[in-house]
Picture (cartoon, one colour):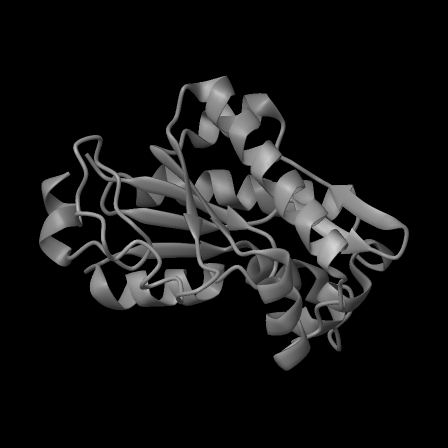
Amino acid sequence: MHQVVYLTGAPAAGKSTAAKSLRERVQGLEVFEFGERLTMHLAMRDNDLIQEDIRRTSAGVVTPADVQAVDKQLLSFVAEARMRTHVVINSHPVTKEAFGFRVTPYSLDDFALLSPTQIWVLYADPETTAARIGRDAQGRPMVTAAEAAMHTHLQASVAATYGMRLGTPVHLFDTSRLDPCQATSGAPPQATDGTHPPCGPTRRNWTDV
């Protein structure tokens, strides 16, 4: 059975790093980068818009309808790709806004159609998150430790809700002291429930699942 991993977490948790490393290690792996797809969707009405702009202004340029349009693309993508290979979905429905935070999740019915086999949440302690954004913001708004903690908690709660709805395992990986490819290096590359730590699975492990 091909794995469909829903990878999520607050900004600077290491999602893109983990997805990139997995793509290099797992033959044929397909990765759906929600932020990139959203940028492409928005570019159809504003060619000058880049992903850093979206991160910086978020609700100022991204409407719930925009998110729903990319959600539909994701459903079609996964339905086709999972028939032939493993899939990683890099997405985070919680965004930092000027007024606080915004959650634009999948409906539970749509998430059931997506039907991931695993849900991974990457997280870091608030101080580490704020420091990472400070070093390399890439358009992400600066946050206090309290805001970083709130963002992580909201992201994890959405993922837990998805898991409870589908009965899908939810695994949370701490990337505070190690990069996402090392965070669970002490764990076996393939656990008894089929779980693989970020960046940990080899080509053989994923093929055998």
